[in-house]
Length: 430
Ligand code: HAM
Image (cartoon, rainbow, N blue to C red; front, side, top):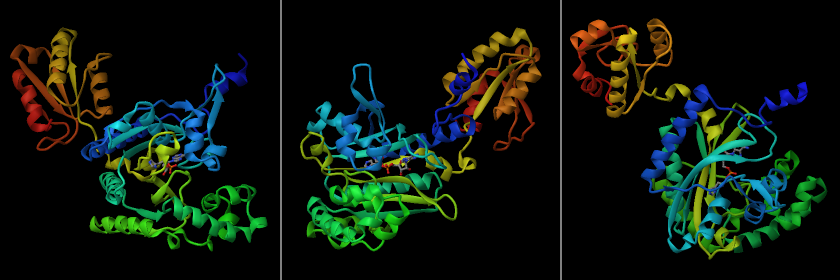
């Protein structure tokens, strides 16, 4: 193997990274907290494959979106089928709903998390393999479902102590709204056709809404003066959006209307929203995005079924979160002093693992001092020490490595062996 190839194989692919140490711990903590909250809100788990036929994403997300036209990881498999790594979760979930005939058992409230793939230019908070946690509430057309969905996001942000966020809210109305609004947009943008980026010129007739979402600075300047979709909502779309806003006000969820928020995917109707946070003084990024998609199930070949959902970008949540806010998981370690006590220590370890809801470690390699140092390094709150004296008197020595309740780091106590489990239940609250 030549040197260049060897080096290449030891790097990660651009825009993809390993997660370990504090990052991996924070990732796990975030997933655990969101899972608890969505379960409480009646969502149940669903898993779909990471790889789907490319057609699953083409029609659903829209061929003029950046995600489909530029960012898909697509390739031919060995049978010459075009397959793609999923760039998001919603299209796969709707595909699963139809494939498994789950349209008979509505409504469905699902949650999922895992890696997504977009071939975008990597930068802070933007990766080619990134992680989402999403929910989809399928089979509901009530505006209060949108409110409830947004309220779950607010609950997650509160739990994760992320406060510097703004909720941007918009409505892209129903089909009729968008048809009429598109005509207005074409009329407006046609006046600037030559100044628009080549991408936006292409989108002008086919899908002018996408120009509002352009990343090109000049397009963005021109779009600032474009007509607002909120001035073109049909009466029923207007009423729907009013009810969503009333619901948010009832729950004291603050928001800002953002008429430019059409979102980067084509499947939305009515409500669209994003929670944004500042990365630095110049840049803000969306940590979660979502909205209603009443036409998607039918578009993908199923019956007409309304739905609403959102997805968090976990990588971005990790930037917004403070690792110091993650409560350390309590751990203890069992240490024997001499080889003679090893068997008793092994048995005690397994009894503790059976009885306690916490990590019980049993370091076996190296000297007693080395194992004690290791226990300290991995953050064990307390070590249980078994030596010849302890075995003879049927006692266990507990040494605290961190302050906990009325015990101080460094303090040692001896307790009868049969009281060890009860002691941890009482004093470590496990
Ligand atoms: P999205 O806005 O495309 O929506 O993605 C949701 C979130 O994923 C974004 O707000 C962002 O935090 C994160 N994200 C997107 N791309 C990247 C990237 N390259 N690197 C890091 N994070 C990223 C959806 O995907 C929809 N499926 C959401 C939805 C569910 N709508 C209805 N139901």
